[in-house]
Length: 169
Image (cartoon, rainbow, N blue to C red; front, top):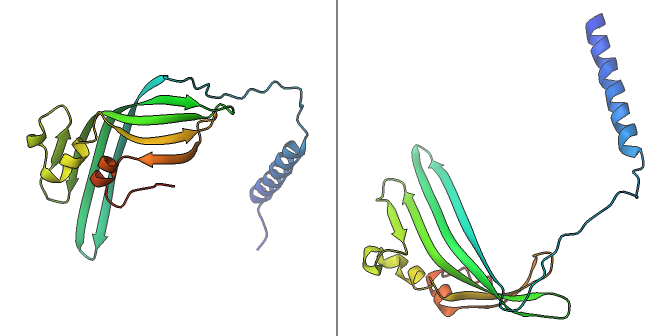
């Protein structure tokens, strides 16, 4: 079946565009362009506050049964630099200052947790998590690019609140 002129023109255009793309990628770039590297400059007793938000919805289905799992978490945290070594790596201690959770599995009742509320208003299964608020949960070593080098220690209170998630190296 013969190609129409329109189809042939399209094929030729695509081939030419593809070959120009290859030529552009092979063209050397100038090494004279300025480059920068951002890095952390840790200092002992430095305090950094930040907000951590996590939102997920998972849909599970087996045959005709469907379940939706909702998990939303908002937390305010901070880390304190305990020390800095000769390479500029910081030993940091992480603390959760406040946590708010909204979770639901299928048709089960919604679980709402706010660390500002009394522990009695929190479901019993989540009270160990509330016990970690305001306390150091981990000590870690981070390099100047922010990469986690090593988790030095994790608090026993945190491990009790999060069984099976030790992540200790």
